[in-house]
Structures are given as C-alpha cells and as structure tokens.
Length: 397
Ligand code: ADP
Image (cartoon, rainbow, N blue to C red; front, side, top):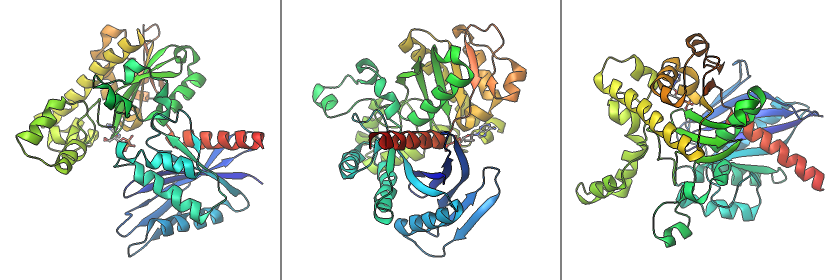
C-alpha cells in the first residue's frame, strides 16, 4: 500500500492543499492540488489533477466553520486516495521564531510555542495554526509536521539579523527573521541538481511574487535576506511597502493621527505597486499600461531589486549567480532582462533567446555571474520535509 501526504497552506480566507503519494523509493508524486476559498462567507472547494483536470468541486451556500471544511476535505481525500492511506499532514507555518531551524513534529508543547509567536505574525500565524488544531481533533493519530518560512534563515548571523535597538528589545526577539524560507530552500535544493557549480557559490535568489523578497545563499546556506521582523521589509510588493524609514510611522501617528489599524492597512494592503501606481497590484497590468504612475511603480520595483542585489552581494562578499522565481520572476522576461542589464556592473548579462524561453540558465556562456529561472515549489518542499520527518520517526522507533 502506498502512503499519502497532505500539504496545507492555510490563509485568512482561503486554504490551498496538495496531496502527494510517497513512493517506496522516496519519490513524491503529486496526485492533486486545490483550494477552499471564500472561508467565512460562502466557501467553494475545488481539486484538480496535476494536468489541470477538475477532480472535485463543491459550493456551500452558507457559512461553514473551518473544522467542518477540513472534515469535508479529509473525506474527499480519503475517497481520492483509494487504496493509499493518508500518513501525515505537512503545514506551512509562517513563523518558527528563534526556536525552529527545521520542521517540527507537532504536539501540544510545539503548538504552545507556535501560538506564543502569534504577536510576531498576527495576520498569518493564527490561520496557519487553526487547521493543525482542527486536524488533531478530526484525525488524532495523524502525524502533523509544521514547516516554517523562517527556518531556512536561522543560519543568518547576529549582524544580519540585529537592529540597532536597545538590548532589551533584541532580547525579547525584536530582530530580523526573514521569510519565504521554504521557497529559498527549494531553490537551493533544485540548484544543487541542475547547477551544482553555481549552487556551491554565492547566489542571490529573487522571489518575486505578490509577496517579494530576496535572499543571499552561500553554498546552500541562507546568509541574509531582505525581509525582516515581519514580511513588510525589503522590496516593494503587490500591496506592501517594503523598506520604509521608521520616521514615516511617527509622522503618520503624530501628524496624521492614524490608528495602528489604519497604519497596518496602509502598509500591508494599500501600498507597494498598488499604492504607487494607483492602478493595480498586478505586474502584468502595470507593465502593459501607458500610465506614468504605472511606469514609475515598475521602475521603482526594478530599482529596489538592484539596490538589494548590491547589498546582498556585499553580505556574502561576492556574487556568482542570480536566480529568478515566483510569479513575476518566472514569467516576466522583460523584468528579468531589465534587472540583468541594469546591474551589469556586478557581472550580470542576459541571453535574450534563453530569457524568452524562460527556464534554466538565461545568461550568455562566459558571463562573470550566471542568471537562472527556476520555478519554485513550496508545497513540494513541505511534502519532502514531511516525508523526511516520518522516515526519521520510523527509524527512531
Ligand atoms: P503569490 O505571492 O500570491 O504566490 P505569485 O508568485 O503567484 O504570487 O505571483 C503573482 C504575481 O505574478 C502577480 O503580481 C502577477 O501580476 C505576476 N505575474 C504573473 N505572470 C506574469 C507575467 N507574465 N508578467 C509579469 N508578472 C506576472
């Protein structure tokens, strides 16, 4: 009998899931992925095969609580798996704090530690933890593995994580953590397979999606990243500011008399590409728009990538390769070409044909610093961690 692994990436109003079959030889085969959307209103469920064929759909015409939605999902997966048995669930959890540099097998104690981290990621952590609690009730014997967006960056040293604040604040955990770690870990893993030479060197990975960040990875280990105490810092994003002088917050509080909630909405939901352009947070729309504010927003995004590229190269003392990933990084040849051309001083260059094809190496042979497009797969990374924790657990028994 083969084993099923469920991966859950739960957000505030939607939850994504994927199901993998863990083969005897350790291979993980995706059998379906889908999502539940409209949680809290009229939820919808859809599950698709890897080729996009719809395997299941459902719509509720009233509010259904999260535990009942999860119960529906588990029932559907059981039918879908047929003779295979669900052996574990891996969860994306945004914050593992200082404690976790690797995935954790969840028990009551671990859940308590993770709940104590809610103040560090109030918009995400509670939604990540809710299905873990529900699953423990619905399927008490099922091992659950928490995989953290911060864990990959625990290798960052003091200088890369500190703020120049009084010690008492550093001591209580006010520091840079970095996020998107599951994506960076997956890229480091894929790079070792497809480009072992550059993977052993100094690499900057640009995760450019609606959330965007960059990470300096030296010989497979995260050295520094652009996101900080929260996922607000660094690059401008779809609707988030990115790097911002803290003095602006004082101005908003003291001169504009804005409340904390208003400032939170401004920084997370009304800024970034959307705020600057006044048009959209969708990079496709902005790049095809003739509006001068759309152009400024795109130019600013590219400019900030260049600034961070220099900073991350400095953190590693060199640069051998740059990788583009996530929605914008994987799909916008124009943006990649501009980043590479505008940062030619770092030894970067673009091979136009390869860049248009958009996968693998996109720099010309002999470039001082190579450039790559590598699709990320955070769900597969979680499934791999879950498989490995199960294996270690079985070996220890
Ligand atoms: P998320 O962070 O939500 O997972 P994605 O990685 O899916 O986001 O990236 C979403 C972003 O990718 C959007 O801003 C979208 O406009 C952008 N995007 C997708 N395809 C393209 C494209 N061909 N050109 C430019 N941007 C693109």
